[in-house]
Structure formats: C-alpha cells, structure tokens
Amino acid sequence: MPTDDGQFKARCRFRDHDGVTRLVQRIGKTKTGAQNNLKTALRERQRTGGAQISGETRLKDLGKVWLAEIKADEDMATGTKQLYSYVLSSYVEPAVGALRIREATVEHLDRALVTIRERHGRASAKSAKTVLSGMLGYAARRGAINTNPIKFTSSIRRGRNNTNRPRALTPQETQEVLTSLRRMPRAVDLDLPDLVTLMLGTGCRIGEACAMRDALNAEGKQLLDLQGGTWEINATVIRVQGVRRLAELQAKGKLSWEEQEELAVLLKHPPGLHVQERPKTGAGWRRIALPASVVDMLRRRERELRLRGPVEVIFGSPQARALRDPS
Image (cartoon, rainbow, N blue to C red; front, side):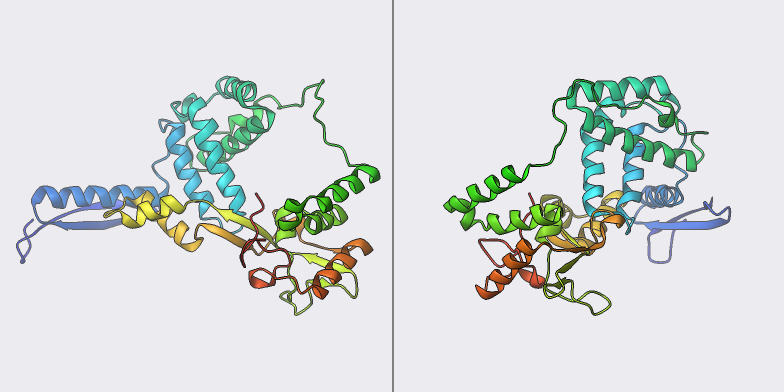
C-alpha cells in the first residue's frame, strides 16, 4: 500500500519460532521494492529462529549455520573455531557438501571419512568427523533428523604399522638440542635457547610459553613466582585469522545477514596476535612447579634486563615489542 511520503509499504503476519504470530512490514520506493524488502526481512527472521533447517537442507548450508553458532560461542577457544572453519571448507564440503541432511546416512558418511583419511591422513579424518558430528547434532536439535548418524560410523584407528608414534627425548638428546641452539647465532638472535629451555622444563605448549607473564592473576597473586618456583598457566597466544576478510567486509556496501554476523565476530575479535585469557582446554589451567634450570634462566633474563613484549610477556617477539607468533 502507498504511504504518505510517496513510498510503498508491504506487510504480512509471520509466525515466529516462539509460536507467536506477529505483524511484519517493510517500506520501499516501489511496490516491488517494498515486497522484496519484506521477503528479505522474513528470511532473516526465519534464520534467527533456526526454522530454515530441514531434511532437504544441503550439508554445505547446514555447515554455514552451524559455524555461525560456533563462532558466537564465547566459551570455545578461538583456535578451535578457526580449525573447524578450515576443516569444514577443506574436507567436509568437498566430500559431502552437496548431500541433503536426509541423505547423510551412515554408509555415505563412513565412505566419505575413509576417503578423507586416504587423501589427507588420519588427523584430518578425525577432525572432519568432529565437525560432522557437531553439524548433524545441530540438525537433530532442530528436528531435521531423529538421531545423529555420525555416532554409528567406524572408528578412525591408528594403523598397526605406524612408525610415527611420538616418544620423549632422552636426557642426552635434550642436552644436545639445547647445546646446538646455543651455538647457533641465528637461534640466539631469535631467542630460541631460553624459550626451548622453558618448554623442555615444563612441558607447556608453545602458545602458553609465549604467553608467560610477570603479572597478577584475578585473585591478585603472581602468575610467575620465582621465589616459590611456580608458574600459573592461565593463557595462550593465538592468531586470529581474517585480516583480508575484515577489509573486504568493511569496504563492502550492503551486507547480507550472514556477512553482518561475520563482521560482528571479526570486530569483537580483531585479526592478529592476541593473548587468550585461558589455555587451550579447561584442564590446561594449572599451577606447576618450575625446575631449578628454568628458574635460573628466568632470573638471568631479569638481570640482563631483557626487553619484554606487551602485557609483560616474558618471551616477546625478538624483532619488536610485540607478541611472539607461536607458528
């Protein structure tokens, strides 16, 4: 219908995901424009309620909706979100993206996981299975399927003749590594001997080592206590991907609903290096005893007045006052 200012209004009643029917209306410069704006608004309301998921939805579309929910999860580590996004686009979508949810049978999924393992390795297949489990679990919660078929696929076991099993370094090998690093000028310039000493002495992850700080925790206690010989591991350094994507979205004019959600996430967690205020897992938050060799190394660094990185990290970038990239 026409409005007083010469535009057009289109409206209808829409039953939202909470079961309540509401009046929805949109305005446009023409009658067709108003109708198109109303259709767009209805599609967005449908997405918000999750009603777009059905047995006819293709897995590639299910993956996008599931990933949007994952990215909005504040409790999930940023690195895990980035891994899931990579696995979805690199392995899952090429293997089964064209299937509809109702076609995602145990047989189809099992065959796809075997193919991923043969082409990309066991670790990639396990990650793909995790992503598929999350996607199809989401579909089950939305009523698109009765049960998650990924639960009934075969286990992805390690091969019997696998010769790449990890093992610990012997004391002699450990000493050889440190001695070699200390003799290499390039390694010394990159501050590797002390960083490796810390990792060998504590068993911490490299991201946790790069996030070691001489600061206070939330309770006002020292994270790093050289007098008591302890260290509270409560953070890790991560790299948030998306520098180019952020620039693309900011330069673009009108954004779709999915692009608006993506931009909001990128603005909340800007691309680049950050100290994530929690380790990779909940069990990774711990206070450990430091061996005497690590305490001596850290005291020596204090005496040498080593330049620290931002937020008082002990092992900053060797080239500038910035966080050290774990990669």
